[in-house]
Amino acid sequence: MAKQSHSVGPYHFLVVISVICILLFAADVPTPAFFPIDHYFSYRYDDIAQGQVWRLFSGNLLHTNLWHLLMNLAGFWVIVFLHEVHYKRHPEKLVLLFVCLCLLEGVGLYLFYPSLKAYVGLSGMLHGLFAFGAMMDIRKGYYSGYLLLVGVIAKVAYEQYFGATESVTELIGARVATESHLIGLICGLLCALCWSFVANRFKYNKLS
Image 1 (tube, helix red, strand yellow):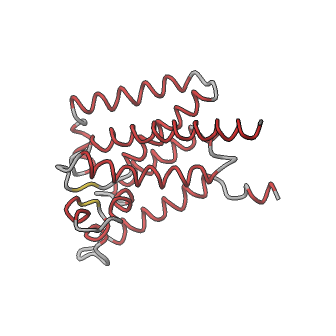
Image 2 (cartoon, rainbow, N blue to C red):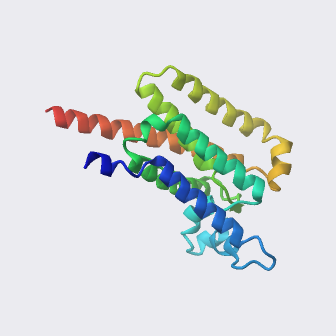
C-alpha cells in the first residue's frame, strides 16, 4: 500500500502543469486564435473587479510568447528538482502549495498593485516556491537554505529598485512584472511559516 500511495510523485504533477500551460499557449497561438484563451483567462484587474475571480488563478498559467513559456516551465522543473526532498514522499504538499501560491499571487497583485492592469506567467509563483523550498531547507538544518533565501531576497530587492534586465523584457515581449516577484516571495515565506507552525503543532499533539 505504501508503494502504491507514492506511485504518483511530484514529477507527475510537473508534467500535468506543463501540459496544461503548453495547451493553453497553443490554443492562443493561431491568428485568429482557436479559442481566445488570453481574453478569458489572463489576469486583468478591471475584469476581476467585475467579478471574474477565476482570473486570479488562471492568469498564472498563461504566457506572452514561447520564450516566456519555456523559461517558466524550465524554472518550475529546476526548483522542484532542487527541493525534491520536501515533496517526493508527500507530493500532495506540492499540489497544495502550487494552488495556494497561484491564488495568493493573484489576490496580492489585486489588493496591493491595482495599477498593474494585466499579468500572465508563473514567475511570481516560482519565486514563492523557491522561497518556500529555502525555508524548508533551513528547517531541516541545511545551511544551503540560508544562501538560497538570501539570494532570492537580494534578487527581488534589486528588481524593485533597478527593474528587470532589458534582455529579459525583449525576450518575453512584455514588461517584466517585478511586482509579482515580490508578492510571490512574500507568499512563499508566509506559506513556509504556516506550514512549519502546523507541522510543529501536529508533531506536538502526536507526542502528547
